[in-house]
Length: 311
Image (cartoon, rainbow, N blue to C red):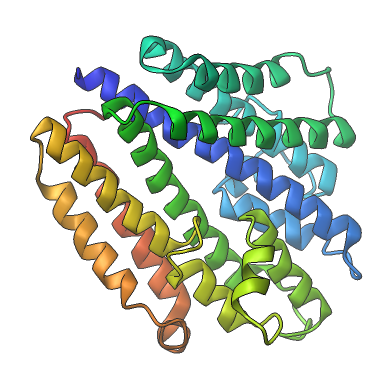
């Protein structure tokens, strides 16, 4: 496979996963702000900007961090690269470059998600924005199913590799921002708003039911952190993402003969994450652990590019 083809497939996986994550984040934050027993207000939306690293870009607009302004900025605003519409556009461009490597179902899911935003009305209406967010989530599930049913070859593995690396970064940033930034000053840890916010984190990664199955003592910070860091059976956990990267790199090494720095880094990371104990991590410093993981994930991304000679 040509390096530029591998690169397009990898970035297709990353961009579509990122679009889905931002869409989930917007939908879950809107639910927290609207349906919570105590509305989270600007703090929740400021955290959504921080998770996606769009806080500086939004601040440059001069707008207040209200529900409508932030939701529209993160979804339909094409002026910055962190919005859903820009991620979908980049995913579609990469998909067009490798159209023959994708099944009709995979391409259709990408194209339909993109068309949802191409046909968007002018201006910013929150209800329309949330409908588009829901459509992106539906098409993302369709894309994941299509990739799962694709022939197990290099095209599938490069898409999955991009998805897994992006997913690990998203989950780490989500937990880090909630743990340090989201709870307004004066609000008690373990209070109603705190519990609502942790529930929103679980909703963002589709983990509410999984949490109830695995933990019987109710919602606690330690258990949420344990689920999203150390439980490999949770698809969007750091442990599951780390394992998937190792698995996919192994498949690529077997069929391409390219084995090197990225494989070694991925195995070492998966081994460390498998030994993670949430209580020890929280005691030693969750923020420091997650920042180190994010930095390592960036290094792994760079190593993948060098190993397969793409950027």
